[in-house]
Image 1 (cartoon, one colour):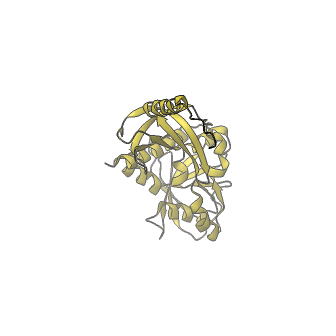
Image 2 (image 1 turned 45 degrees about the vertical axis):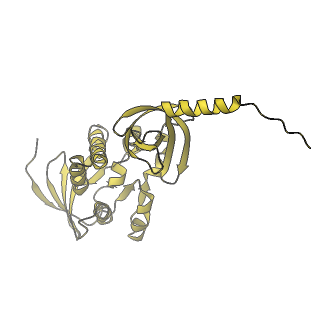
Length: 255
């Protein structure tokens, strides 16, 4: 149910915001102190499925503000003809719906009226600075602009690594191949938590969902990357190794 919009002027000089608690409209004009513990969500954080896990755990005991531009961008991406864009948009919207469904969490949509329009990150940064709120991100490259603006950031990459399930060599993963990889014969897919999976022998299987065998897992500052074989590729590799082991070894004798 949509409430009728009404005006509330709370003093101070700053940007103008349109707040949508439960999809009602409240126009709020205030410089600082919107609420103790307010946390603004950047699009990179909303696209990270671990955000929901962290919220469920109770670690996010703050009021969450989500820029309206982020939802608008995700909605457009969810309707894109490009499959990668469409999957990205749908994933972000699904995370938002899951956050909304949490009873112990308060999330509001904020439409900022400022000169920062055009970049969802800059709008989120502007909101956080104006309301003296913290900014939640999941992209380490976004830290420096926030620090320059004097905004405190919370990096989901540092908070939530333990929320990813461990993956070990030899484990089986079911993955949908979404695009070709950089190397010949490789396909690329993603796990539900956003982890990239590089699959040997899957370049001709784009669009198909496969059972893969994990070869290795590499970790870096941006997260982790999993390398796998298709079952067929894994069988070929195993047969090749077995055949190599069966070949007779010629003894060498000094002349």
